[in-house]
Length: 409
Ligand SMILES: NC(=O)c1ccc[n+]([C@@H]2O[C@H](COP(=O)([O-])OP(=O)(O)OC[C@H]3O[C@@H](n4cnc5c(N)ncnc54)[C@H](OP(=O)(O)O)[C@@H]3O)[C@@H](O)[C@H]2O)c1
Picture 1: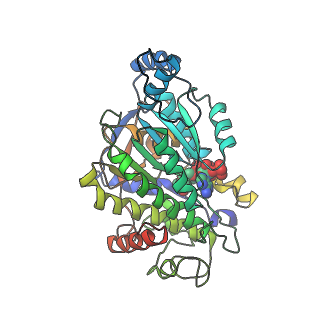
Picture 2: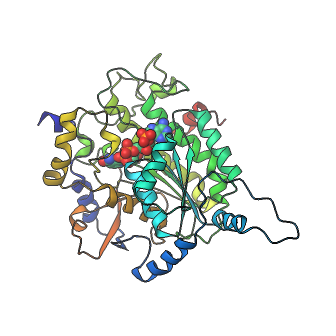
Picture 3: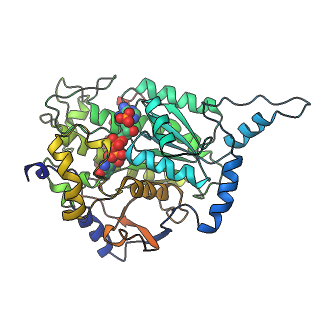
């Protein structure tokens, strides 16, 4: 059982059960099981619309206005596509991001921007899942480079698309790394990618989100930052060593560049802890965004723990014994396991379900209630976060330093 001693997301049910137990707080929000985004009645209409959808694969530039003559059909179709509610999902080339992209694209309600570092991998994955042509666009984004983030934002703005939802999903997890590695800008890779890259992205796209027309399926713009049970020390999984702990942020204050320390709390490098710390940063950032911008912009900010998706690429750097034992351990012992497809539907629900419009919350699901195919409904539960994640003084300090590190000052 040595391999499971360091498991990444043990006992998801512990967290979900805790959420269920606090029934007064928990808002159970139902969604159809087959497709969280639409009823069976509307599936036919969607199929009809999809067959007529424009096939826009490349990054689209705004069309020049036609003078006098009838516009060519292709341009009209392109315009139609540009007006469609749009969601940007980072790290949509595999796992949770890919499956959420698929779910949203298949719904017919969304155009999905798959913001990925490996263009070819993302395109291949989208085709393999049968994502309808014209329902998605792959755009290059490497979160381990602030220059790439800025370039992505510029390319997105040039595309002329509206932005209705932004999902900060991509992540790296380096549990076996003995030495720190660094982003193009010299930050420890896990925090640099998972937190700082997303931090810049969200801030640079805030105006686009704010300006989103109100006719999207969710009813208002949304910004979702994927969290994790592992960053929440109020759960069993969050207490598996090494535990997340940002301390007084002294490593971050010193630049997180390895000269003093590559860990946020200033301690010795630990790859598993760096990932967990980055997830704490993700959830603290979501709360800061909510406090700073929800009221003035109308954007709903939220985080989620989709369940333990034990077979995703996230564990690619783990030892092979762990990768073999982890899925059955999660399925049969902790019951925290969730398939990639189901997790993707959950994230899609948080993006698109109009009833999940609350801002500043952390959603999760009770696996014990959603594992049977014949159950008609499943719901997202508003969960509680750990003491550290709810520490808004620490959140504000993290925000200020992150602003400086990514050059937003
Ligand atoms: N798996 C779980 O049990 C679990 C549990 C809780 C939360 N989560 C969260 O779920 C999210 C998705 O993880 P996953 O399990 O789906 O893992 P995954 O399959 O490995 O997906 C991670 C995605 O992030 C992308 N990515 C990594 N570094 C990037 C960079 N520098 N720039 C752009 N994209 C980058 C990867 O791209 P490539 O394809 O090019 O590598 C991949 O598309 C993460 O935020 C993770 O923390 C996962």
